[in-house]
Image (cartoon, rainbow, N blue to C red; front, side, top):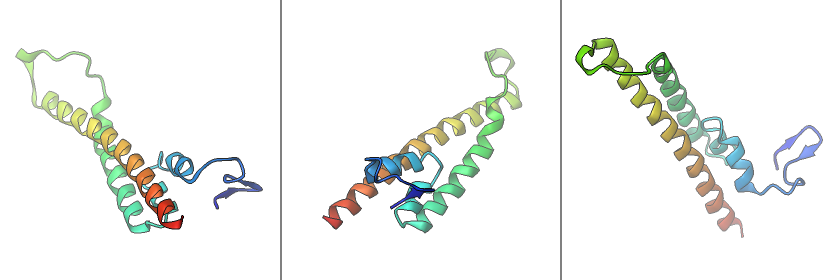
Length: 109
């Protein structure tokens, strides 16, 4: 059971799915907790890469003038798309970790 110092999360009444959901806020950490180390590390690497690519896309795009689209505007639009994909990947890996916790719990019972 995961413990933080003298506090065991299981004793706080948190179920395995809840613990995994909290840990999965960091890309791949929930999967590593469940014993899926390779999968968790892969998700960490992919998530970190997506965040590093998408970060510049959050800079000062308030309005797009369709008559004056430049190459940098097209790049920024693409980076926003990557940013949205990053958010989607982040949500998916949290849901995937919860499903994996459910599957492991069903096997244990």
